[in-house]
Length: 557
Ligand SMILES: [Zn+2]
Image (cartoon, rainbow, N blue to C red; front, side, top):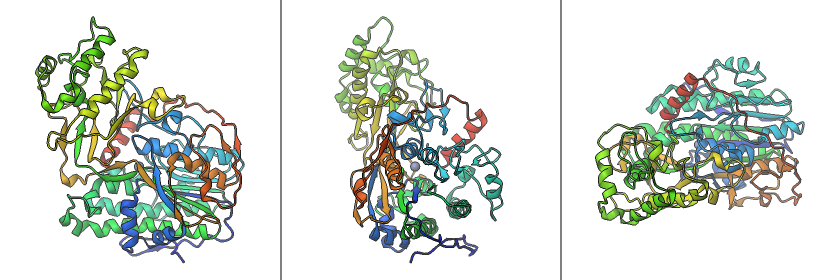
């Protein structure tokens, strides 16, 4: 039998949750492990660090879970919660799309469409939701309970529903915080902090479940994501930069953090044995990266971007867009390796003499990366609608032609026009060109420095970044052990609804993973209830700044 409960930290105390009593048939449990990847989890299960996961892998159906593009936590968790892709729910990044330099942090109000917990609640069932990212302000469920997670702006705000729940969580020995990793701790202190909060959160989860009967439990453990951002070259022995000296100090405590995750998996495995359907999922995968790719610098080299006060690469004044496109084409994009100086590039070079990041000249810029996480390019507003596709293709040519000066290898795997990846009513809210680095060891930056297009990051930074393929592991009655292929993050919500016996709204982009279930029950659908994003100011400027700082501390941006 799996173990129950989550042990306390190095002080040796142990929290032992009593096993869930009774029959849990019809209940659905979603356990999110932010950023979890089989590349790390499988070896940890095999080495005995995650014994409950090893059991779960033997009993459950498991495979990769395809995330959105680019695979950022915010849009990915919203996709998991809504069953919709970014083109439909409208969240693409940590910030809502806007003009360059303009940004507003995403909140639970930014996303279009009902969330899994809203649908469960509307069906008269009880949802318990804890620490799902991008869920602040809390959902006011009629039957359920809600605790916000990442992006909760401090401890003074109301982040639970019902309101009184917050005081109860605060009274847990050791305390409770909704977004505890904002402090900016590093090294061993940070690792121990993750251990502590995995346990505190699990105590909170049990408090909610003890309040009465329930139908959905949806919780997310955030820790794997920042741990992997900070410690990838300690966690992954196959990383060429594997840091043996750091590993001697840090690997054991890191494994303890994963052991804590494993205890939670054990708890959920026990729920599956009592009849619940359990879906263990991650919002995206993870892998190493070694270098930053300065997208705006690459665009600048081809005259597609001009910084403020700089000399326009291709002056817009007096030119039709057609002429501009032709000029871009003449830049001999694929000749980048040859470094043939064109007159345009020579003129540009005179404008690039500052090591400081500078604002761009929006009037003289055709494409720019503006998202802080930046794996995308916006086409300037002034480009006419009927020419945006072709301009977008030019941007794609430039990005796909970019070569790492150190290796001569291409930097990105592919770039796509947004409409070739997504459709939906919110397509206009996401950037025009989306970048996929694949397995290549780069991540994007929108910084406009004077140096080259690529910069190596120090090994001490840890060097983990998101990948497109996360994990899914399904457990429960009628779910046979084995491999699962082709699952996507948008499939989680419809599958959870189906497992609860509820109808699936027909406006979800995902599908029920019917291959999981042996009962042959037909999928019921119902008309989706459109729900607009709410144009409400959720965060103060100070709160946004604090959350941005914590995202930096955690390695998300
Ligand atoms: Zn994530």
